[in-house]
Length: 298
Image (cartoon, rainbow, N blue to C red; front, side, top):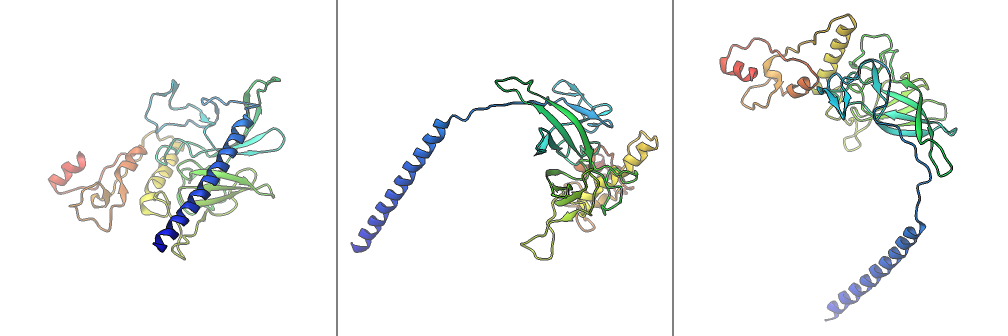
């Protein structure tokens, strides 16, 4: 009886505490509702906003998106933005994401930071429009990146959405930029013009001391490097006038083909779906086994 009474008393005390907190929360909620937060200014940048640049969207495999013709001939999409920095003078710096939703589709999307000037629409006036003033492109002319990138063999080595998936950025007091990438994941450090100052900085795995965090698309994984190498070869061929796509020709035992009965060398390395999504035909070495050959053809 004594133990039951203590539990009941403690339960009543807990109920009183919860009731008090609930009432306090209700009061705060009422205060917030009574404040009537009001939108005072608005500016809009149309989704179909483009900037000068090379043709992009060639791997989207669609004739149009929301009425906009694809690919985007001799231009780059300005949107969408993953991060915004206020410049303090009415201007903003906005960072475009890695492009078209995946590594395989974004090799022709240049990683950029745009400077924009909104003319906010308020009750006093304003157009509500946003003007794109300029941009910088992330690039690695000093060859600091130790793995293949799409523009591997070009002088400027402009970075693309197939190289990094930048999601955030900050401006340091010295005027340089720091970007957060998800493919590595890495930290990228550039100067004010987007030129890489350091090799990509990996993130430590605190659960496994001495190791690094690696995503599925990490360029140091064999699985994550194949499309990158093919992108570099394709871009190099295009710059020399070749309009044909390189063919990927691996040994069939190294294909990630979903067949558990095939004896693989070590593990499934080459992802068929990923390579095909990036636009690369796959033709394996000669296979002297009719059932296996037919399986591969299918």
